[in-house]
Image (cartoon, rainbow, N blue to C red; front, side, top):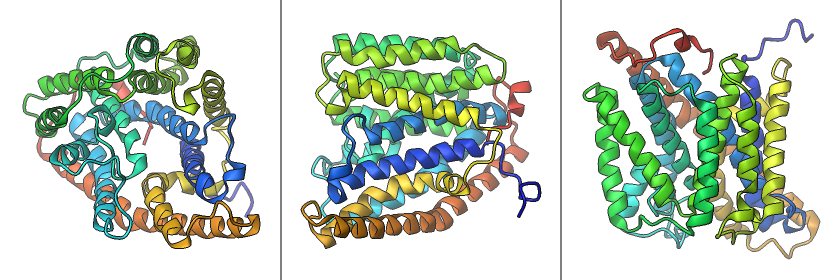
Length: 405
Protein backbone atom coordinates (compact mmCIF):
# COMPACT_ATOMS: atom_id res chain seq x y z
CA UNK A 1 0.00 0.00 0.00
CA UNK A 2 1.43 3.35 -0.97
CA UNK A 3 1.94 6.07 1.63
CA UNK A 4 -0.67 8.20 -0.10
CA UNK A 5 -3.30 5.49 0.19
CA UNK A 6 -2.34 4.35 3.68
CA UNK A 7 -4.79 5.27 6.39
CA UNK A 8 -3.79 8.44 8.20
CA UNK A 9 -2.39 8.03 11.67
CA UNK A 10 -3.93 9.92 14.59
CA UNK A 11 -2.47 13.40 14.96
CA UNK A 12 -0.95 12.47 18.30
CA UNK A 13 0.41 9.09 17.22
CA UNK A 14 3.88 10.34 18.17
CA UNK A 15 2.76 10.45 21.82
CA UNK A 16 1.55 6.86 21.60
CA UNK A 17 4.95 5.96 20.16
CA UNK A 18 6.67 7.63 23.11
CA UNK A 19 4.44 5.68 25.48
CA UNK A 20 5.40 2.52 23.66
CA UNK A 21 9.11 3.32 24.03
CA UNK A 22 8.63 4.13 27.72
CA UNK A 23 6.74 0.90 28.36
CA UNK A 24 9.38 -1.20 26.60
CA UNK A 25 12.14 0.47 28.63
CA UNK A 26 10.39 -0.34 31.92
CA UNK A 27 9.79 -3.94 30.86
CA UNK A 28 13.44 -4.23 29.84
CA UNK A 29 14.56 -2.86 33.20
CA UNK A 30 12.59 -5.54 35.03
CA UNK A 31 13.56 -8.34 32.66
CA UNK A 32 17.30 -7.86 32.40
CA UNK A 33 18.24 -8.56 36.05
CA UNK A 34 16.34 -11.89 36.00
CA UNK A 35 16.80 -12.98 32.38
CA UNK A 36 19.83 -11.22 30.84
CA UNK A 37 21.88 -9.57 33.60
CA UNK A 38 24.90 -9.26 31.32
CA UNK A 39 23.16 -6.75 29.04
CA UNK A 40 21.66 -4.49 31.70
CA UNK A 41 23.06 -0.97 31.16
CA UNK A 42 24.84 0.63 34.10
CA UNK A 43 25.49 4.08 32.64
CA UNK A 44 21.81 5.06 32.79
CA UNK A 45 18.67 3.57 34.32
CA UNK A 46 16.29 1.98 31.83
CA UNK A 47 13.32 2.00 34.18
CA UNK A 48 13.66 5.62 35.27
CA UNK A 49 14.18 6.58 31.63
CA UNK A 50 10.91 4.90 30.62
CA UNK A 51 8.99 6.28 33.60
CA UNK A 52 10.21 9.83 33.00
CA UNK A 53 9.21 9.60 29.33
CA UNK A 54 5.74 8.64 30.58
CA UNK A 55 5.71 11.58 32.98
CA UNK A 56 6.64 14.06 30.23
CA UNK A 57 3.90 12.65 28.01
CA UNK A 58 1.36 12.93 30.85
CA UNK A 59 2.46 16.48 31.54
CA UNK A 60 1.97 17.33 27.88
CA UNK A 61 -1.42 15.68 27.38
CA UNK A 62 -3.33 15.68 30.70
CA UNK A 63 -3.89 19.45 31.06
CA UNK A 64 -4.76 19.56 27.36
CA UNK A 65 -7.35 16.84 27.94
CA UNK A 66 -8.88 18.75 30.85
CA UNK A 67 -9.02 21.95 28.82
CA UNK A 68 -10.53 20.13 25.85
CA UNK A 69 -13.34 18.83 28.03
CA UNK A 70 -13.63 22.16 29.84
CA UNK A 71 -15.40 20.13 32.52
CA UNK A 72 -13.82 18.55 35.59
CA UNK A 73 -16.65 16.00 35.85
CA UNK A 74 -15.96 14.58 32.40
CA UNK A 75 -12.23 14.68 33.00
CA UNK A 76 -12.42 12.77 36.28
CA UNK A 77 -14.92 10.23 35.02
CA UNK A 78 -12.54 9.51 32.16
CA UNK A 79 -9.59 9.22 34.56
CA UNK A 80 -11.43 6.90 36.96
CA UNK A 81 -12.60 4.56 34.21
CA UNK A 82 -9.20 4.76 32.52
CA UNK A 83 -7.06 3.91 35.54
CA UNK A 84 -9.00 2.01 38.18
CA UNK A 85 -10.41 -1.09 36.43
CA UNK A 86 -7.03 -2.51 35.41
CA UNK A 87 -5.36 -1.26 38.60
CA UNK A 88 -7.91 -3.13 40.71
CA UNK A 89 -7.82 -6.21 38.48
CA UNK A 90 -4.03 -6.51 38.76
CA UNK A 91 -4.07 -5.84 42.49
CA UNK A 92 -6.77 -8.43 43.16
CA UNK A 93 -5.01 -11.00 40.97
CA UNK A 94 -1.71 -10.54 42.81
CA UNK A 95 -3.45 -10.89 46.19
CA UNK A 96 -5.48 -13.90 45.03
CA UNK A 97 -2.33 -15.71 43.88
CA UNK A 98 -0.33 -14.93 47.00
CA UNK A 99 -0.60 -18.61 48.03
CA UNK A 100 1.58 -19.41 45.01
CA UNK A 101 3.82 -16.35 44.66
CA UNK A 102 3.74 -14.24 47.85
CA UNK A 103 2.85 -10.56 47.73
CA UNK A 104 5.90 -8.30 48.01
CA UNK A 105 7.35 -8.27 51.51
CA UNK A 106 7.25 -4.46 51.59
CA UNK A 107 3.43 -4.49 51.42
CA UNK A 108 1.80 -4.21 54.84
CA UNK A 109 -1.20 -6.42 55.50
CA UNK A 110 -3.44 -3.80 57.07
CA UNK A 111 -6.26 -1.37 56.28
CA UNK A 112 -3.85 1.50 55.72
CA UNK A 113 -2.51 -0.42 52.74
CA UNK A 114 -6.07 -0.82 51.44
CA UNK A 115 -6.67 2.92 51.87
CA UNK A 116 -3.43 3.76 50.05
CA UNK A 117 -4.34 1.54 47.11
CA UNK A 118 -7.86 3.01 47.01
CA UNK A 119 -6.47 6.48 46.26
CA UNK A 120 -3.42 5.35 44.24
CA UNK A 121 -1.45 7.83 46.38
CA UNK A 122 0.78 4.98 47.50
CA UNK A 123 4.22 6.52 47.41
CA UNK A 124 3.17 9.75 49.11
CA UNK A 125 1.30 8.06 51.99
CA UNK A 126 4.07 5.57 52.85
CA UNK A 127 2.32 2.51 51.39
CA UNK A 128 3.98 -0.07 49.13
CA UNK A 129 2.06 -1.25 46.04
CA UNK A 130 1.21 -4.92 45.62
CA UNK A 131 2.76 -4.62 42.15
CA UNK A 132 6.15 -2.95 42.01
CA UNK A 133 5.28 -0.46 39.25
CA UNK A 134 2.25 0.98 41.05
CA UNK A 135 4.32 3.57 42.91
CA UNK A 136 4.53 5.85 39.87
CA UNK A 137 0.75 6.21 39.77
CA UNK A 138 1.04 8.19 43.01
CA UNK A 139 2.66 11.07 41.15
CA UNK A 140 0.24 10.82 38.25
CA UNK A 141 -2.60 11.21 40.76
CA UNK A 142 -0.89 14.11 42.54
CA UNK A 143 -0.50 15.82 39.17
CA UNK A 144 -4.19 15.28 38.26
CA UNK A 145 -5.31 16.76 41.57
CA UNK A 146 -3.04 19.77 41.27
CA UNK A 147 -3.94 20.44 37.63
CA UNK A 148 -7.63 20.29 38.53
CA UNK A 149 -7.15 22.82 41.33
CA UNK A 150 -5.15 25.13 39.05
CA UNK A 151 -7.81 24.80 36.36
CA UNK A 152 -10.57 25.81 38.77
CA UNK A 153 -8.73 28.97 39.88
CA UNK A 154 -7.56 29.88 36.35
CA UNK A 155 -3.85 29.38 37.00
CA UNK A 156 -3.42 26.41 34.73
CA UNK A 157 -1.70 28.37 31.95
CA UNK A 158 1.35 29.27 34.04
CA UNK A 159 3.06 25.98 33.31
CA UNK A 160 6.60 27.30 32.76
CA UNK A 161 6.60 29.13 36.08
CA UNK A 162 5.19 26.09 37.87
CA UNK A 163 7.83 23.83 36.33
CA UNK A 164 10.63 26.09 37.55
CA UNK A 165 9.08 26.42 41.01
CA UNK A 166 8.90 22.66 41.39
CA UNK A 167 12.47 22.32 40.13
CA UNK A 168 13.58 24.82 42.77
CA UNK A 169 11.50 22.87 45.29
CA UNK A 170 13.33 19.67 44.33
CA UNK A 171 16.66 21.38 45.07
CA UNK A 172 15.38 22.73 48.41
CA UNK A 173 13.91 19.43 49.58
CA UNK A 174 17.05 17.60 48.47
CA UNK A 175 19.15 19.86 50.67
CA UNK A 176 16.80 19.87 53.67
CA UNK A 177 15.01 16.51 53.82
CA UNK A 178 16.18 12.91 53.85
CA UNK A 179 12.67 11.42 53.79
CA UNK A 180 9.01 12.32 54.24
CA UNK A 181 7.88 13.44 57.68
CA UNK A 182 4.25 12.39 57.32
CA UNK A 183 4.26 8.71 58.24
CA UNK A 184 1.93 6.21 59.83
CA UNK A 185 -1.36 4.63 58.85
CA UNK A 186 -3.34 7.75 59.72
CA UNK A 187 -1.93 9.51 56.64
CA UNK A 188 -3.44 6.87 54.34
CA UNK A 189 -6.77 6.93 56.21
CA UNK A 190 -7.14 10.73 56.22
CA UNK A 191 -6.04 11.14 52.62
CA UNK A 192 -8.44 8.40 51.52
CA UNK A 193 -11.38 10.11 53.26
CA UNK A 194 -10.50 13.49 51.76
CA UNK A 195 -9.88 11.98 48.33
CA UNK A 196 -13.16 10.09 48.14
CA UNK A 197 -15.19 13.03 49.47
CA UNK A 198 -13.47 15.46 47.13
CA UNK A 199 -13.88 13.20 44.12
CA UNK A 200 -17.60 12.87 44.81
CA UNK A 201 -17.84 16.66 44.92
CA UNK A 202 -15.92 17.06 41.65
CA UNK A 203 -18.16 14.58 39.85
CA UNK A 204 -21.50 15.63 41.32
CA UNK A 205 -20.80 19.36 41.21
CA UNK A 206 -21.44 20.03 44.89
CA UNK A 207 -18.81 22.38 46.37
CA UNK A 208 -16.65 21.66 43.33
CA UNK A 209 -14.33 24.64 43.63
CA UNK A 210 -13.74 24.06 47.34
CA UNK A 211 -13.17 20.36 46.77
CA UNK A 212 -10.65 21.04 44.00
CA UNK A 213 -8.73 23.45 46.21
CA UNK A 214 -8.67 21.06 49.17
CA UNK A 215 -7.54 18.15 47.00
CA UNK A 216 -4.85 20.28 45.37
CA UNK A 217 -3.48 21.43 48.74
CA UNK A 218 -3.59 17.87 50.05
CA UNK A 219 -1.72 16.59 47.00
CA UNK A 220 1.00 19.23 47.33
CA UNK A 221 1.35 18.58 51.07
CA UNK A 222 1.66 14.83 50.60
CA UNK A 223 4.13 15.31 47.74
CA UNK A 224 6.52 17.45 49.79
CA UNK A 225 6.05 15.95 53.24
CA UNK A 226 4.93 12.40 52.52
CA UNK A 227 7.01 11.15 49.59
CA UNK A 228 9.47 8.39 50.40
CA UNK A 229 12.23 10.58 48.97
CA UNK A 230 10.75 14.09 48.78
CA UNK A 231 13.17 15.58 46.25
CA UNK A 232 12.49 12.79 43.77
CA UNK A 233 8.73 13.33 44.05
CA UNK A 234 9.02 17.09 43.63
CA UNK A 235 11.40 16.61 40.68
CA UNK A 236 8.82 14.36 39.03
CA UNK A 237 6.21 17.11 39.24
CA UNK A 238 8.72 19.56 37.79
CA UNK A 239 9.16 17.26 34.79
CA UNK A 240 5.41 16.88 34.35
CA UNK A 241 4.83 20.63 34.38
CA UNK A 242 7.76 20.94 31.96
CA UNK A 243 5.75 18.68 29.64
CA UNK A 244 2.81 21.05 30.02
CA UNK A 245 5.07 24.02 29.28
CA UNK A 246 6.16 22.31 26.05
CA UNK A 247 2.49 21.98 25.11
CA UNK A 248 1.96 25.70 25.80
CA UNK A 249 5.01 26.59 23.71
CA UNK A 250 3.81 24.46 20.80
CA UNK A 251 0.48 26.31 20.86
CA UNK A 252 2.19 29.71 20.97
CA UNK A 253 1.05 30.33 24.56
CA UNK A 254 4.43 30.26 26.27
CA UNK A 255 8.18 30.13 25.89
CA UNK A 256 10.57 27.21 25.87
CA UNK A 257 13.34 28.56 28.10
CA UNK A 258 11.54 27.62 31.37
CA UNK A 259 11.69 23.99 30.21
CA UNK A 260 15.47 24.23 29.78
CA UNK A 261 15.86 25.86 33.21
CA UNK A 262 13.71 23.12 34.76
CA UNK A 263 15.66 20.27 33.18
CA UNK A 264 19.01 21.74 34.21
CA UNK A 265 17.84 22.28 37.79
CA UNK A 266 16.37 18.78 38.08
CA UNK A 267 19.56 17.27 36.62
CA UNK A 268 21.67 19.06 39.23
CA UNK A 269 19.71 17.99 42.33
CA UNK A 270 21.80 14.86 43.12
CA UNK A 271 24.91 17.04 43.48
CA UNK A 272 23.25 18.74 46.47
CA UNK A 273 20.80 16.18 47.84
CA UNK A 274 21.46 14.67 51.25
CA UNK A 275 19.95 11.35 50.23
CA UNK A 276 21.25 9.87 47.00
CA UNK A 277 21.64 6.24 48.04
CA UNK A 278 20.10 4.48 45.05
CA UNK A 279 22.59 3.84 42.29
CA UNK A 280 20.39 5.50 39.69
CA UNK A 281 20.38 8.87 41.50
CA UNK A 282 24.15 9.13 41.47
CA UNK A 283 24.87 12.38 39.58
CA UNK A 284 26.41 10.90 36.43
CA UNK A 285 23.72 8.24 35.95
CA UNK A 286 20.88 10.64 36.84
CA UNK A 287 22.10 13.32 34.42
CA UNK A 288 22.58 10.81 31.60
CA UNK A 289 19.07 9.48 32.16
CA UNK A 290 17.56 13.00 32.14
CA UNK A 291 19.43 13.87 28.94
CA UNK A 292 18.18 10.72 27.22
CA UNK A 293 14.61 11.44 28.32
CA UNK A 294 14.78 15.01 26.99
CA UNK A 295 16.36 13.83 23.73
CA UNK A 296 13.68 11.16 23.25
CA UNK A 297 10.83 13.62 23.77
CA UNK A 298 12.50 16.22 21.54
CA UNK A 299 12.95 13.61 18.80
CA UNK A 300 9.29 12.62 19.12
CA UNK A 301 8.22 16.23 18.70
CA UNK A 302 10.58 16.81 15.79
CA UNK A 303 9.11 13.79 13.97
CA UNK A 304 5.49 14.39 14.97
CA UNK A 305 4.51 15.30 11.42
CA UNK A 306 5.77 12.01 10.04
CA UNK A 307 4.42 8.51 10.18
CA UNK A 308 5.73 6.52 13.11
CA UNK A 309 6.10 2.73 13.27
CA UNK A 310 2.73 1.10 13.82
CA UNK A 311 4.16 -1.31 16.35
CA UNK A 312 5.19 1.61 18.59
CA UNK A 313 1.77 3.23 18.23
CA UNK A 314 0.13 -0.08 19.17
CA UNK A 315 2.47 -0.57 22.12
CA UNK A 316 1.56 2.93 23.25
CA UNK A 317 -2.12 2.03 23.00
CA UNK A 318 -1.65 -0.95 25.34
CA UNK A 319 1.11 0.70 27.38
CA UNK A 320 -0.92 0.98 30.60
CA UNK A 321 -1.67 -2.74 30.49
CA UNK A 322 1.93 -3.50 29.57
CA UNK A 323 3.14 -1.33 32.44
CA UNK A 324 0.93 -2.84 35.13
CA UNK A 325 0.83 -6.52 34.20
CA UNK A 326 4.42 -7.20 33.20
CA UNK A 327 6.02 -7.24 36.64
CA UNK A 328 3.66 -9.79 38.25
CA UNK A 329 3.80 -11.92 35.10
CA UNK A 330 7.61 -11.92 35.14
CA UNK A 331 7.58 -12.98 38.78
CA UNK A 332 5.24 -15.86 37.98
CA UNK A 333 7.36 -16.83 34.98
CA UNK A 334 10.61 -16.97 36.94
CA UNK A 335 8.85 -18.83 39.75
CA UNK A 336 8.22 -21.60 37.21
CA UNK A 337 11.45 -21.34 35.20
CA UNK A 338 13.79 -20.97 38.15
CA UNK A 339 16.83 -18.72 38.37
CA UNK A 340 18.00 -17.93 34.84
CA UNK A 341 20.98 -15.76 35.69
CA UNK A 342 23.52 -18.57 35.54
CA UNK A 343 22.07 -20.28 32.46
CA UNK A 344 23.82 -20.22 29.05
CA UNK A 345 23.13 -17.15 26.93
CA UNK A 346 21.12 -18.99 24.21
CA UNK A 347 18.78 -20.38 26.87
CA UNK A 348 18.43 -16.94 28.46
CA UNK A 349 17.56 -15.43 25.08
CA UNK A 350 14.95 -18.11 24.38
CA UNK A 351 13.32 -17.64 27.79
CA UNK A 352 13.40 -13.86 27.36
CA UNK A 353 11.58 -14.15 24.03
CA UNK A 354 9.01 -16.51 25.57
CA UNK A 355 8.40 -14.27 28.57
CA UNK A 356 8.14 -11.12 26.44
CA UNK A 357 5.64 -12.83 24.14
CA UNK A 358 3.55 -13.80 27.15
CA UNK A 359 3.64 -10.26 28.54
CA UNK A 360 2.60 -8.68 25.21
CA UNK A 361 -0.23 -11.18 24.64
CA UNK A 362 -1.64 -10.75 28.15
CA UNK A 363 -1.36 -6.96 27.82
CA UNK A 364 -3.29 -7.09 24.55
CA UNK A 365 -5.93 -9.24 26.26
CA UNK A 366 -6.34 -6.92 29.26
CA UNK A 367 -6.51 -3.89 27.00
CA UNK A 368 -9.19 -5.50 24.85
CA UNK A 369 -11.33 -6.93 27.64
CA UNK A 370 -10.65 -4.67 30.63
CA UNK A 371 -9.32 -1.28 29.58
CA UNK A 372 -11.24 -0.55 26.40
CA UNK A 373 -14.73 -1.62 27.58
CA UNK A 374 -14.36 0.37 30.81
CA UNK A 375 -13.13 3.45 28.96
CA UNK A 376 -16.16 3.23 26.67
CA UNK A 377 -18.43 2.86 29.69
CA UNK A 378 -16.86 5.93 31.25
CA UNK A 379 -17.45 7.94 28.08
CA UNK A 380 -21.10 6.88 27.96
CA UNK A 381 -21.62 7.85 31.60
CA UNK A 382 -19.88 11.18 31.03
CA UNK A 383 -22.08 11.91 27.99
CA UNK A 384 -25.26 10.99 29.83
CA UNK A 385 -24.34 13.13 32.82
CA UNK A 386 -23.30 16.06 30.64
CA UNK A 387 -26.64 15.98 28.83
CA UNK A 388 -28.58 16.33 32.08
CA UNK A 389 -26.38 18.52 34.32
CA UNK A 390 -24.40 21.55 33.13
CA UNK A 391 -21.01 21.26 34.80
CA UNK A 392 -18.53 23.42 32.96
CA UNK A 393 -15.46 24.61 34.77
CA UNK A 394 -14.21 28.19 34.73
CA UNK A 395 -12.14 27.60 31.60
CA UNK A 396 -15.02 27.09 29.22
CA UNK A 397 -13.33 29.04 26.48
CA UNK A 398 -11.29 28.54 23.35
CA UNK A 399 -8.83 26.32 25.21
CA UNK A 400 -11.55 23.67 25.46
CA UNK A 401 -11.12 23.03 21.74
CA UNK A 402 -7.67 21.50 22.18
CA UNK A 403 -7.24 18.48 19.96
CA UNK A 404 -5.62 16.38 22.69
CA UNK A 405 -7.17 13.00 23.31
